[in-house]
Amino acid sequence: MTEKDFIPKAYTNTLENGNFTWSSPSNIALVKYWGKKKHQIPENPSVSFTLDYCKTTTTLSFSKKSDSDSFSFEIFLDGKKQDDFKPKIETFFKRIETYLPFLKDYHFKIETSNSFPHSSGIASSASGMSALALCLMSLEKQLLVDVSEEHFNQKTSFLARLGSGSACRSIEGDLVAWGTHKEIEGSSDYYGVKYPQKVHELFRNYQDTILLVDKGEKQVSSTVGHNLMHNHPFAERRFEQAHENMSKLISIFETGDLDAFIKIVESEALTLHAMMMTSMPYFILMKPNTLEIINKIWAYRAKTNSKICFTLDAGANVHVLYPENEKNTVLEFIKDELVAYCQNGHFIADQIGFGAQLMS
Ligand code: PMV
Image (cartoon, rainbow, N blue to C red):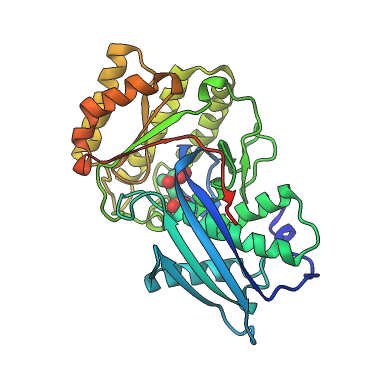
């Protein structure tokens, strides 16, 4: 598949107005995407767990307008008009216009809400952009005669990627790979694919408890962050390492070797932060409580033989990952020992999920 394959043939149907609602999840990367080329092409492959609870629900209402001169849309978050989101959506529309030529024919009302609190420090770009891409694809599906499920998912992921890179991993579940990797059949830089190889049952219903250490705005936007990898002294080696870690994960997913899983996942999280600490300009996105939590997790693991581990996004919050069979004991540990390091004691108990859902 190349970019050209996502340009549709002439539309055969017409549609005056209507609406679609999709609910789309967030995801957490195990091997991190950090660094990109033009048009949101990743510098290295990544793989993520799709989440279940953390999601965005978006209703896209559309009505045909008399001209096709410019984009026309309004956007609401939790029922409130959100004009400050408009530039981001306008940029998204410009990037995807070639692939969805109907965009200027309609006026759109975009109504969106998140299952997680607005100021939780959890990025809504992956779930938000994928939900919007899904609604737009539902509209295109009505304009064409037949669209296979595979094409629908691929193109939605392709479009979501142009909104926010990691959003392309939010369409399906439960494990999604994005970026060409020689051992993952069907993998592509253009869209995410449902991880095609064998996955051990230990990874079924894997738990992710998100500890909200810092609920503030992101200190470094991901656009700035990805750009820091240009001319970064360690970039080339890092991109190779991501390929190697993906290879190692393939056999780990198959055998269920959780000790090896922990090593890759924690190393990936710390490497992501190391890249930010060693770029110019440099940033420290962890907070003292992030480190307190990491040390507590390590001590608990040493003491109990638990398979608990952590990963991080480009921020201070900690994702605590563990197998379902440890749910009760680890949650107890989190409540007793980790919640004290969360802002206002807040955390979100999430787990691996199975992708986006059409609501209406
Ligand atoms: O999708 P973006 O451009 O916001 O980048 C996300 C990057 C990380 O969340 C740090 C890693 C990842 O692979 O999701």
